[in-house]
Amino acid sequence: MSETEDRVLGGCRIAVLLATAVIQAGLSLPRLGDTADRFAFTALAVVLVVAAWWVLRWKPVPWPVALAGAVVVLAASTVAVRALPPDRLLGGDDWASGLAGWHLLVLLLDRPALAMGALVLQMTLTFSRQIGSAPAERGEIGALVIVGLSVLTFQAATLALIRVVNRRVGEAAEASAERDRQAHRKALAEEREADQRNRFAGQLGATLPLLAGLADHTLDPRDEGVRRRCALAATQLRRLFAENDDVPDPLLHEVSACVDLAERRGLTVTLAVSGEPAPIPTGVRRELTGPLMTALVAARSRARVSVLRTDDEIRVAAITDGEPGATANGSGLVDVEWHALGERSWMEAKWRSRPN
Image 1 (tube, one colour):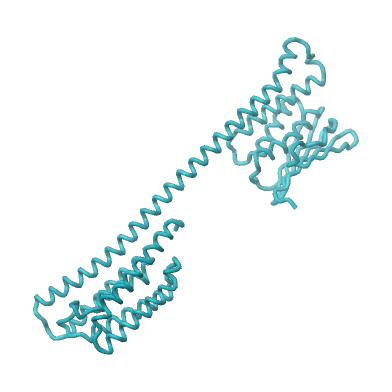
Image 2 (image 1 turned 45 degrees about the vertical axis):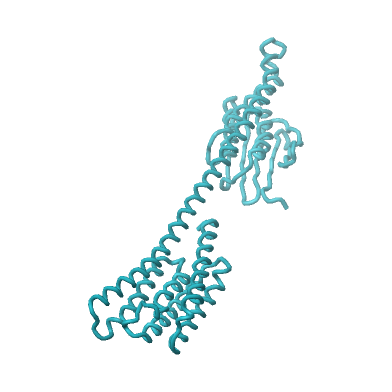
């Protein structure tokens, strides 16, 4: 049950409780008769006070308390009804038959099927007083049934109305929450799209001078440095395209995009992955794969790439036969280390999802 539904149902509980208290004190108290009436009235009042302890705090009456209270209500109603002559049932002196039903609603409002069953049982006990007495005229029995069913129908309609209102409120709250979720998703999509446009524009701005230099022959494509710049630019664009794909494992998808482009350049690359996919912010994925792109571009013939994922740490590492890159990593979200291992270089980018 949503918070809105819970609040509405809590308000309905309080309304039924207050209505029952007014009926008992204002309409039933003046009609009390002998000792049996006073005993039944006191029992019903105690049940109402006990139920109010939870209802006034916007909580449903606990199941054990509600069940025990319902038994007390039915017993008190039966005692009061049995003290009346059969010809006075559901009349001006019969204060208990109608009042007991409202007490049952206070106790069982959160359990509509059980509440309806208790209401029917309570009215059946009232009718049994007439059945167990001397035979009456058909007209008297018919009038008794009509009055009893009227009381029962009104209380059952109150129960049904409360449940319908509560259900409609829940549906409205869910529809409102869904609209909020859609608006949030739309805002995120627009933000992501704007970020992608900015990144594509920035990447294109960094690539255009390289393309212009190749076009006007100011850059020699045979030069090793120029080829590395071209390879890096191509890898960055390929990873940027991969970043926008909707896949279950974005980090591995982007790492695979970098590896794929390196293999197309003729490198022999092995990729090892361990651990389960984990949610990683886009900016962190960029910083994890950035050093990897540099390492793969610097590699001459072979590279070994590994992705290690644990509960609180993500590592992307590469061992290549190229030269180590720079140790700086920009924003500081990701720790990057480069080491020379003889004729090889080792790079590791590490991000901790739970900082120490």
